Length: 96
Image (cartoon, rainbow, N blue to C red):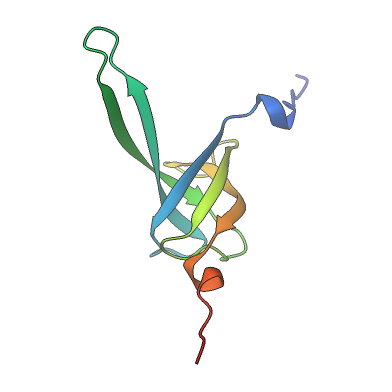
C-alpha cells in the first residue's frame, strides 16, 4: 500500500491559546471558533480543547500557538505545535 503525504496547505491548521502544561511534551490548546447562527444571525463563539504534541517542550501557558493536524500520536493527541506566535514572557520587557 502506498503512503499518501498531503502537502502543508491541505492539512488542518488552527490557532489557539495554551491553557495547560502538565504532561511532558504535551500541552492543552483552546481553539476559539466564531460563526453566525444560520437562522438567528447571532455570532456564536465556541471553544474546543485539543491535546497537542510539543516535542521540544517550548510552549508555556498563555502562549498563542499555531497547531497542525498530524497522524494519531496517542489516544487523544492528533495535533502538533507548528509555531509559537506570541508569548507573554517574550513581550514583557522590564524597564526601570
